[in-house]
Image 1: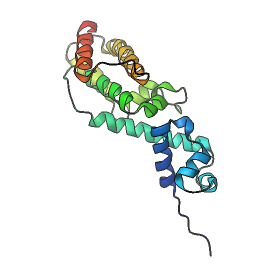
Image 2: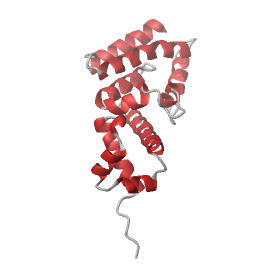
Image 3: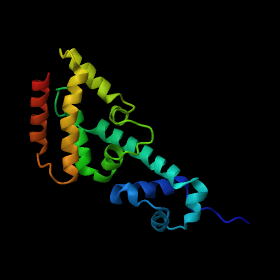
Image 4: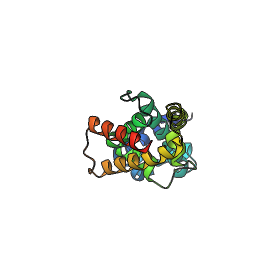
Length: 181
């Protein structure tokens, strides 16, 4: 009689993703994952061909996690790019390890920074269209200028160097939108 499997693909992914959130993706090793999942490394390598395959699955889960965060972020401003920027910065503050894996790492599994931010929802495209409808002649260029500041602020939050609150961040992004427009 064959032994019943007690660890599933979803179970391993759930533990691996939580480890990536808590400890950083770099710390998700087969041995550490096995210890957290309460199994040996054998089921991990039976389910996943390699650690690279598991890393890709964790990455894809992180992409969906970010998109969910962005889509559920409450609307604070009607100015284009402001909510997007605030959500991105807040995500960096709340989910440092996942943010770093998605937006700081060079290993993006074939996705560009634009792909990750635009997501399945077409977030950037919608914001560019919104800016154009409000009279902005070069909304793509406006986005690039704002994004440099937004991304910089988010990265500063990883090191504790970003100390603006939500209201001040909103004001800053709204003022920049007006001045760049």
